[in-house]
Image (cartoon, rainbow, N blue to C red; front, top):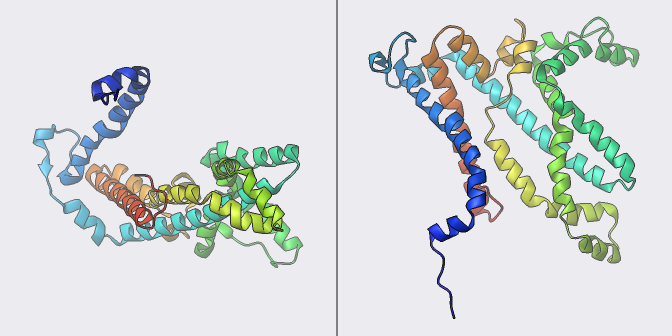
Length: 307
């Protein structure tokens, strides 16, 4: 006898334990992610803290127009995009390459040691990392200058943190050092899920380790790479805050300030909360739009997608 499909209420009753377990998470998301969206109304007001909501003066798109006419804001958008693209590109390439290299190690003990050492910097705060970078790049007793001088690459110490053209590269290299081990974990997990029979068949056909890596391992983690890329695109305007804020100075300010620093400096510290809200809304809306576009392109290409 053919059973009738269960109703929504019946399926919900059968999965009541899972639903009850998800209630705290749902409440957390509503409380800290959706209810605060009410504050976006400040972006359309000349917000004054001492006034109630009904007493606020509505300004329409005044602050959004101001942002796109402000050269400082446009410069911070350029800086944010540049640093974010550098971090994303270097982060993807190094994480995938490092995962492939770790997968090729046959000594399990050595492999675990290398992996553990590589992801330990992830647990350091950016404040500590910034202090290490500043010490390493110092003119006097800085390890980088000392090593390069000893090798004859440079004749005299370089003011690394005072030359604008070096700043984005410093941010990118530091990001890779801190996050490459952590980003590698998910790719290693994807590699473990590849059927070992594929490697055995390739070995019988005479493939060497490089060919197996190229034709089996990389295609095997292709879906994971695309999903991670879509998620990374959704954070394209999140280039960071702590490191740029702590390392910036008058000489490199034009290339160091990001949107988050702009919000703090010209919005919150100046008590212009409407401007700060408008800048934050712009960043979030761009990130959401890009992740939807990337997801749509992946869908049309027949690849894995988030939605």
